Length: 307
Length: 307
Image 1 (cartoon, rainbow over the protein chains, first blue to last red):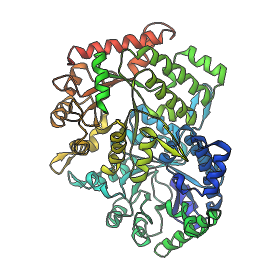
Image 2: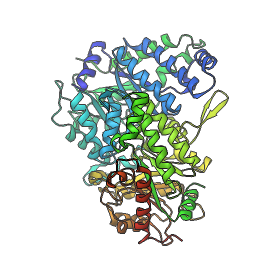
Image 3: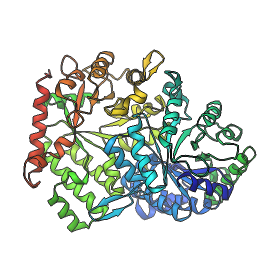
């Protein structure tokens, strides 16, 4: 059921981290770009091909180190439908390699539109007498500004298919407080969103006590993270902001419960761009990414013990 | 500049409405589906082909009646990358036909991810020495829960390229109030979002006084609409909720200023599915859609005079 699958993978690898797959073209080693451009031209198709070669290499290098990957939709959409094709291919390949796939799409809409998004990313699409998984992720991120009308259609897919979601609650960016930190009634806005998420997920608790409705809570506000962990004991956390954005292993420890459960920490750039720090020309990107993922795992292990 | 282009089209056609292109498969006339399935199979590609035939027919029928169309991303994503290809094709074709294209994507993210979304939908993508428009819309909808870090990268594209955006402020759905109607500090949450939008857009006012940062304000809460029109005099409104969701022409009149400017009203189902009410078999879908769009225009004209 839902986060249980992820938690089991985390326990097996003793690694509560997820590798973001946010393929900016400047993150891709030059030899991969050159090869793709030579075969497909300096086109969206060429760029998409390079992203695919890079992603596949990263997945091969990381699949026995990290339990999950998180492709970020924006970088694929930027390459048009050709990019979306690579996003789908990446999700499928990562699942074949045993990874849990969180599609970082931050969608949010209502009624039949939210249902369509949920079908697109977590469910399947009926065409005549056939059904197809359009993108087939295990989990998505969603934006709940429009209220439970947004969250419920995704929850239905999660319940029906053992999948999961993360609602944006307290994000890691500098301006997150403009809205999220306002006092709304007797609570801060982000707590309202957190409480709503936990309430809607109620009844879907897995063997570790977590519902299929998780929350995004940034590492860059550790005191908020600590307080939300206490407040939302049945809510699994996705924690961005470690590394490049300034969050440390010491900060993110507060995302976990006393068993070391209930959270996964994201890093993207530090793993994808690790090859830029080895002094090489990028041919070592797989080893560099693997080393960076292992270093991150060990860094977090200093503060978190997974039972 | 930005909404000026849209406002000029509205004035020319005396029609402040936008036709939503939300192609659920059940909205498509049977003969189109049958033809596409015969050629491409009952597959995602077959369904995407049917959507394309339907959209092209609608655009041909509507392009001298409505000033704008609004494809809703969810229904294209539901058909995988093949659907996204049709979304891009639809945007391109609608622009060729002189329509203003609002991509209803409700994206929201931060930093370089928000930049990537903005490039994908409003800007262009650099690949080697070439640049491409991935989707090339005139305008997008965005979700500002993450604050100005989300809105600014889209605004930059708008300023650079004469494009526009709508931030979700007060949405038309039943549960919109769960968050949006809370009292945050001295204001309701949706007013906070509206004020933020107007403030960020400042300095981009066009000849009608509107900035390139618009707001989504639902027709289903007419008193909120009226109050927001007074409060946000430089903010162009996109108003969903007319028709199927219960909003009337009398309700939506409050979205406009005294010149009949500053707003556009959306209808999707009532136009796309108009053929289901003619007693025919769907071969008349173009005429039916056109008649419905004209009826909607005339309905709104009873309450709104465009100077």
